[in-house]
Image 1: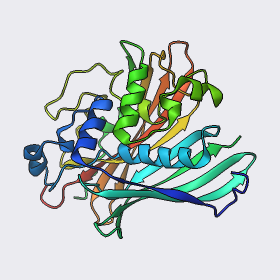
Image 2: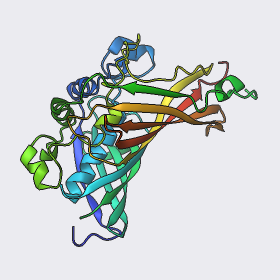
Image 3: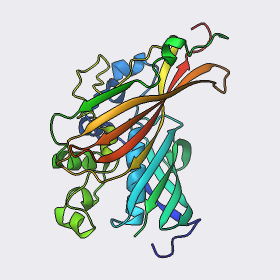
Image 4: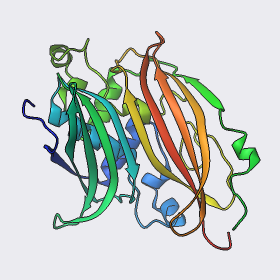
Length: 135
Length: 168
């Protein structure tokens, strides 16, 4: 992290989120909302597929940043806005760029993209930002 | 459609708070379960020695876990399956969408931490969507502290009550 400056890109983190991952996340967070797994309920709400808990994208962003800065750096802020719902089976890619590095704190912008089967970006699930205290 | 949907009854709820105290410590297994579920294999969450080698007293929670778990709420399941904190705000003719979150991490969460979570309705505002429909934006703030009164994380959450469209 010695060469970290404004403009330094954050290595992307890519994950396919399947229904099993969503059920695991629902269990791990004590959140059993039917929107994440119950097709009868999902059809009634007008969605065509189980909807990924948006905060899974926040967890992905946190992982993306922590993996990038390493275990000695401390994530101190993370914010995100939801733009497009992610459906079960979608592949999400989180990436970002360093915005500033001042007084040992790096600020970065983050994006969670939705990819198609060929790996092309077809939508933006969420945008966000983070601050990390470097060591 | 020209009537305000942010009524005085709704506005009167700004400042309302709810406090939850977890019935037990959050626990080391919760860290590993969450890390497995999101596919994050960082040893900070599972390996005591690794965590100590990087300046912690032992394993820590994946950062967003405390803001996501309903473990502390100890509430019954609603018909939707949801069993966490909510405000039960009635905004007729709207549907609820999640806008986003802003987390501030003050102190790493440890397995022995017993959460006290204080939710507060910080603000409500009426806005027009890009389609010219009114919506109510509700900002709530949750503060997560441990049994020693140490503030761990602050979570500012945005909820959007969006009009269902014409005729509703």
